[in-house]
Image 1: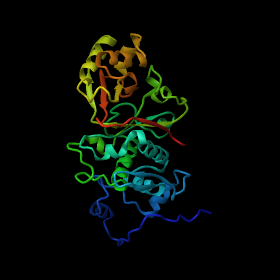
Image 2: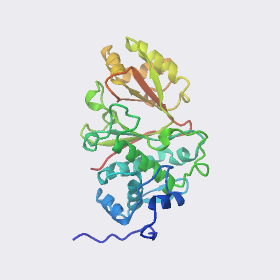
Image 3: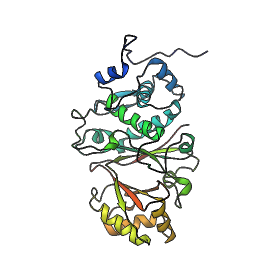
Image 4: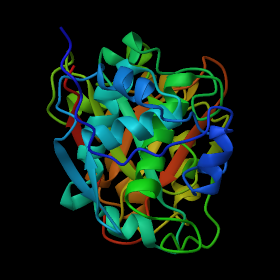
Length: 314
């Protein structure tokens, strides 16, 4: 027999013929796009995606320090369009962004365009069909779109970072709707990001990075040095050299660079030599479709922040 859920959040009564989507707009609970109304039935189904108790306080979300209970996380996951099986990823991401090194308060209120970029590694990528291939930063995959969107809604609805109020971003970017990718581990000739950070290949993890807008770097160079010189020249103007930057190598770039004997640490050392960026501040992964000579650079916000990787409890 199922246990009756003791709801912690206030429930709002609505007429049977009420437009619940419009009600969410009226209450300021959206990111500008329509959300799925978080009815008790939908929230209960979402909570079935985790064995954590609804009343458990996972973290407080700045800048208003609202309480991110499991129930409230589930509510926002419903609104974002998540499936219940996405809940462990959303929970781990909330744990990661609220770790002190990430400095979520600064990320939420800065005039810069930063927002949490989620990088998913491990078996859960395939289990949940999280895109690591074609159009990896674009539209078309429910898991990427809704997991990233849930984190943004949590930052707004629980944390109170409303644009023009406490979110003071001057220009913003599209990643502030959703910013979630997976690494294409099976095609990579380098160790996956989470293994590089001390996790087992069988672990599933989420890495969060306070990312600015992605910058596409095209290079048709025939050698590793050709490609890396173009990347170094491009990223020299992307954020201070004392800050982290994520480099997402396409398969074509990765194959050329690896063919010439460059591993992850070699790339980091080369970039350090050319740009003075600390090697450990260059986060390297592989994603995207099979064709195209592109690398994407995602600098971090210029304030104090550091990426965090958390294991996903599945």
